[in-house]
Image 1 (cartoon, rainbow, N blue to C red):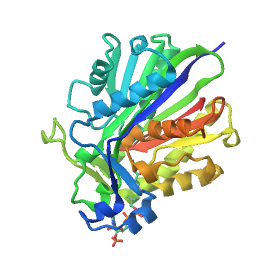
Image 2: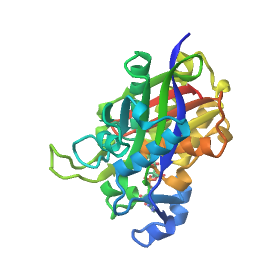
Image 3: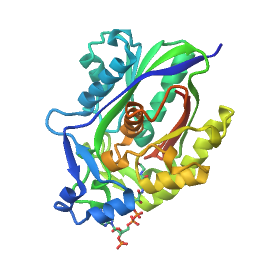
Length: 319
Ligand code: UT7
């Protein structure tokens, strides 16, 4: 028998305030037509007063615990992926831990921007398979609206806020996370970054991106890393039921599907409703497709993401 990290339940949370492209066009020189044609985005949710990375993360985690049917007190590990923590420290994972009423477990954040959820999932999987922990909460949560330059039309129309979470449990069998693959290449720091930070400017800074260059790298890296996780698991693209991708741009999703020879109908697309929610986008898309019944138990899922750093990664999961 093989010990694997099985997804017991999923959850997600979105800020109350939903903003359309037309509303953004009243603030910056853009249009619904340009945003839809270039990105597929129609709406994004923007955090309001009292809504933070930790509160959204805790809401998503509570829903995942409920779906899993397990008590918060049984969680041994919380990993929260974010580039927009509530504070520089403590880790937002510890704030979520307190909000869930968990008094003692391992809790930390990971910073891998849009790939953060894949990084967090991979670390939790390794800790479960090593026998360090039995149950884990893996959360992606972001409030990118707070690090956007709302005067910069090349970035502010692309991102949104939200959170997604999964409860993992170590179980013997053939279900669960089959393989993961992570990469980083710091030579590309300047293509997608924030122009501030505690150790440089002492400010939070704003997102800066050379979008077309990121796009080019994304299509190549994502197709390659998806091939890697399938190879490691002894599977082929024909075995895949659903791709649950990072939701940056509908055109990247189409191009990646084409490269792998997959149908567009096998890609879970939520970028139209959520925009790019960075580390939250993969678990938000996963929860959406689980709850609307598209994703069924026993199916083969591949998750993938690419973001600032660059960082990128993927996971193959028998759900
Ligand atoms: O999550 C991490 C990973 N991130 C990504 O994967 C993002 C990858 N990149 C992209 O999704 C696309 O590159 C963007 C959506 C960011 C941009 O699309 P593009 O087709 O690469 O456009 P572009 O940057 O080459 O800009 C084309 C034109 C420019 O005008 P000129 O120079 O051709 O006159 C821009 O100034 O579109 C203009 N433009 C806009 N026009 C209206 C840029 N932003 C806007 C805007 N509204 N919001």
